[in-house]
Amino acid sequence: MTPPAALNTPRPPRVLIVDDEAANLTALRSTLSQHGYETEGFVDPAEALASIKRGAFDLLLADLMMPGMSGVDLMRAAQERDPDLVGVIMTGEGTIATAVEAMRTGALDYILKPLKLSVVLPVLSRALTVRSLRIENAELTRSVRERTAELEVARAEAKFRLAMDAARMGEIAVDLRSEQVVHTPAFAKLLGYPADRRLSLAEIRECWHPEDRALIIQERDAAIASGAVSFETEYRIVWPDGTTKWLTGRGQIIRDASGRAIEANVIYMDITERKWVEEKQNLLLAELNHRVKNTLAAVQSIALLSRLDAPTPELFGQRFEARLAALAGAHDLLTRASWEGASLADAVSRTLAPYVQAGDGAKRITIEGPMVQLSPNAAVTLHMAFHELATNAAKYGALSASEGKLDVRWSIDRTSTPAMVEFVWTERGGPTVAPPRRRGFGLKLIEQGLERELDGAATVRFDPEGVVCLLRLPASAKVAPL
Image 1 (cartoon, helix red, strand yellow):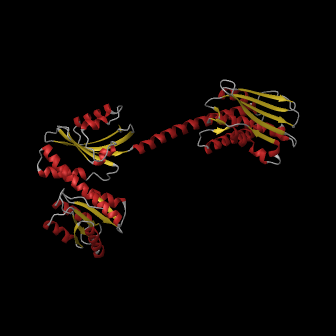
Image 2 (image 1 turned 60 degrees about the vertical axis):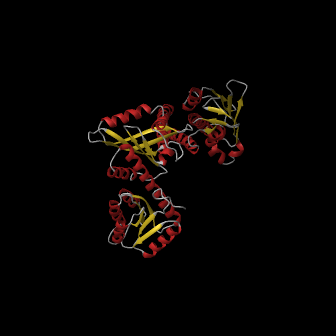
Image 3 (image 1 turned 45 degrees about the vertical axis):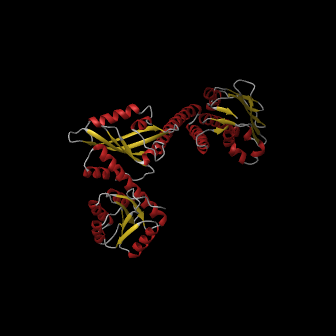
């Protein structure tokens, strides 16, 4: 990797290396020399600091932990003597706290030990590029603002210390009097442009999302009018290809002696992914709230109807627990499908699974029909209805006798508009059936609940040969034949 020019001149960059491990120092100097760098090295931080007085360096590469003076302290002292000097810290600790402390004290980056050539060279190249941009922008802003050299260097230093990650963060400086703009390559990329694109203030404003423009202007004017020296902002932008992104920014307002705002410096970060996660979480919370309410309402209804349906407290407890178990089974079925619905075949098969697996149930029970997808609410309603039919069949009907048989079939009538799912539950071979003296919970759920929930028609016949349940369910978002 070829190092960038340090000062827009042909000369190689000069790197001051400070490491109390002599072997490491020698290896670094040799490696960097082979890649076009001029180097000077010291094991003693005090000697390194003295050398800055004798010659100009472009970059300081210092070990963090050294006897007598840490790399952070050395960098502070060195940058006081040469504000244009950029620094990179070497550390074996590898903690976020170490990196943050180094960044706060003026380092542009840090490298973990043991050193790897594939890491060292790109880090130094990036640091020297930032240094070159810093000097270039300092000269430009010095011309635009007509400031003294001392103020210009201090301002550039303050701005570029905030830049940490060019891939995710971008910086912009706006002269509020002339509306001239200086920005980093990363800022252009945040707006969907190539890194080498120089954007005008008008082009930047064109990227603002139309629905957010009024708010952006309002927040800007309020921050300037309030006398604030810092502000935060968050809004959407639209890339040239039409993609919508979210940016968050933290900035400083520079004011003259009279308090008038003359410049705004802002560092932006792309938070599109975070916003997507937040939106997804909000949708999930809303869906969870909806499901909990529906489940509580179902439990309340089951409890009330089971109490009315049961002649004794003991029977109430048995029936209530059985129906809650059926409701839990329906929820388990939907959970396995991420609550996106379930098929009619799954709803029937799950209800009858205990009877199919018992004895010769597989020979006595037939389940057959085309693919029909059910919405979550439709799946719960039909699962509860099938539970009532199966429970009665096991106690009094076909599944209570060794010779009894249960045939569950459905088909799709596509000649009608909308198409109809025709479902038939047929029991044969069990005890002789007599019509019930009154309509209990199960019958009401089938004849009234299914009609109300699925807009269909439901009939339960108590033929002497066995119970027959007929359902006609219109195709809809709730019941979708495939």
